Image 1 (cartoon, one colour):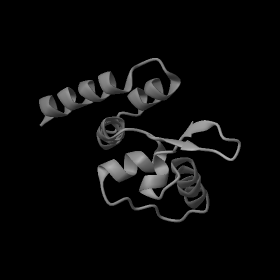
Image 2: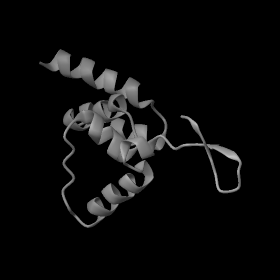
Image 3: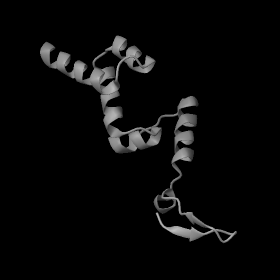
Length: 100
């Protein structure tokens, strides 16, 4: 980020999202509103999906693994904070490999 001069003459940092032409908080609010209204949200990539919800591609992919593996008990444990998401996804991947 670079410094810019505000109206009061004090230096402040320019916001990075201005370069991307996207306010991430507003974007997440838009995605949330669309979900609430039952409108489809179709990101173009894993990275876009993560950005849309304020997460990381690694976390989004890990939760995708749990959902695809039908590991409801692990999902519940992760959402309750009892099991780390990445550990649960690794366990689900190992289990899926064993079963296939």
